[in-house]
Image (cartoon, rainbow, N blue to C red; front, side, top):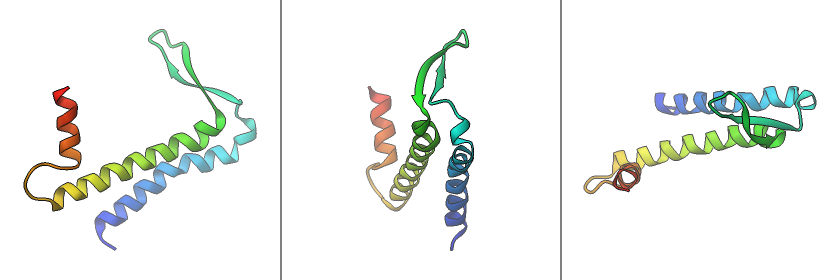
Length: 94
């Protein structure tokens, strides 16, 4: 196992740790929780506890793996920018 693979494994585990915490305290959590606050520090976005406990950490894991895969594809490709560079350049142009 390479150093990079170890780092990806550890960071993936850290991203998933909140799920364990959420499972432990699941029945103590409110059924609807604030997930966004405005500039007056008032809640203006809400989500169910299933999304908060499971969905958000899993979404973060998917985004991390998406970035890792695109970065690796881009590192092995020569020529025109593909993957992450093409995506970021498209965002900058619009």
